[in-house]
Image (cartoon, rainbow, N blue to C red; front, side, top):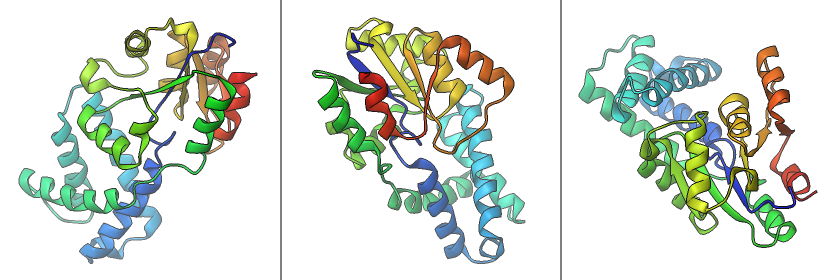
Length: 244
């Protein structure tokens, strides 16, 4: 990696503490709503909301729902599990109210900025960028809110490019924006197949940030090994990995 020029990152749950903000947001919102939402156990509320996000956000990425449609679907299904029916307008308003609690909890992971500083010190002239599956305007709002816009040269979003990770085209598009060959770039993300395997197969150095000590499936483990994926437990381990 002596010719490494660009380090690209996933946004949510890699640099940006998305999961923590989601949990704080839905719990605070459920509490303000009161019964029947506020009577459920916190773990049940969080698990349901995460499951609905995974289901409907991936429907958006696959083109089955538009961006507002996946928000409505998440709100409608969550309410229905608590015996409340919402039409489209009500679902949009419900999600908008939740969203304010989510925004209030936005933050970076504690190891994000120190890792960027250490990379800049270890690799003179290195540039940073983001590749994210999502809407460009929405993801850009998060980047600006937590101050990452001052550190990231470019933000590449699937909603703008027209393809989503793990498609090699989005990784190649990011390399083109930076004017580098894929073997001059590394990509770091918290999802093994979507981020690390996808980027490694596209010719970048693929790094899996396994914060939660997840155990991959046998298929993922084999594909990761074949693609040459590197694994780290935190961003503190990234600078020595890439500069070594």
